[in-house]
Length: 255
Image (cartoon, rainbow, N blue to C red; front, side, top):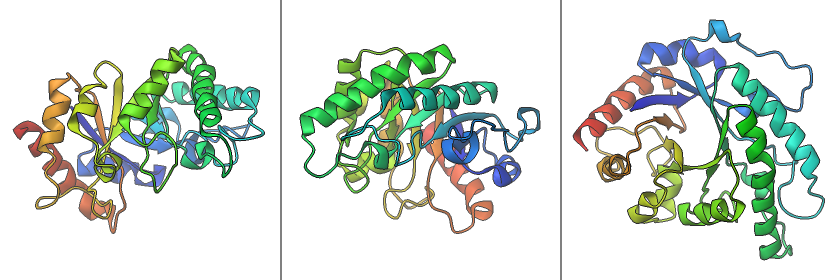
């Protein structure tokens, strides 16, 4: 298992020093798909760590549900994001984007679900053509009113039946929504990325906090052995990251 962290370019060197094995970037801050004249903020050859994934695929104003959805614009944006991610040696883009997919007040739920599924059908092949996989992220109901659980995400994936689409598990959202570990088991074969944070306060996991071992044992039981990104709030990442990474590696080994 590789352990990494969601971080911005100025912090990549300190992430490496803390023991991270990879970093995860932010689509709008790093890849900037709205900018047609993009240059990477850090050249690939100068990266301190492999930049293997990005989160926050769509900005809130690029609508996925509701009136005015423009799938041609969504596809063009996704094509730029995926091509740039691939050029940086990255293979995963996380489709969280709670603002973009939020169902507007008064909009029929069944129509919103159909639109989300259609967007997955539209962007999946675009991602696959670039050698990238889009990982659908379940978000807690405080951040989104659609796709709030792994089971719901798996249902949309089944309906979309699109190449280039997978699922992500985030322990923070998973815990807030009180999802059972059986839901994680059902992602076997489609789980491609994992986020982790201490559910209370969304801070870095540390000893004495939530027991990660049942979660880790379940990941092991389904054969997941790729990457886990810490995605949390920090008081001082340079101080907190190294002990959090060490704690997670110990918990993984003991699980």
